Image (cartoon, rainbow, N blue to C red; front, side, top):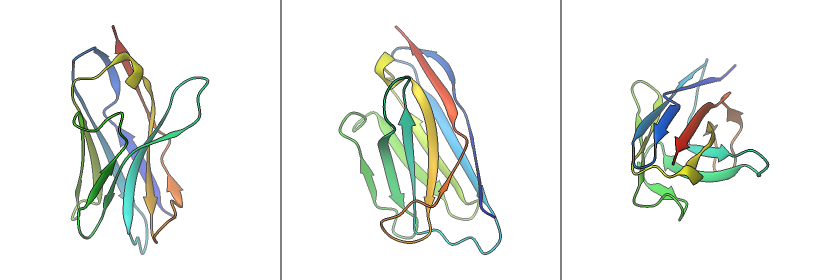
Length: 118
């Protein structure tokens, strides 16, 4: 069983920063890529960023490009999301996801809440 545990969410003022973490664990865990998604109240879940676990190549949603940075620690099997210059529209529940193979995310964490006040 694969487990993903997010942490680092909280309440921050607009313009502030937060760093989210996602620790992955489980037997015979194979990682192709990991990503961050978010869901605001009344809205569908949306993609935020992803990282290739081996190459480290990254991809971002346009709404966060230049403000958010995704990174990973292969040895610790931990994913990060550094969020700078946060805006009220970034308020959402943030989830990390793990894809053991291309084009698919099979495992999801419970998420962590990020609230940005204006």
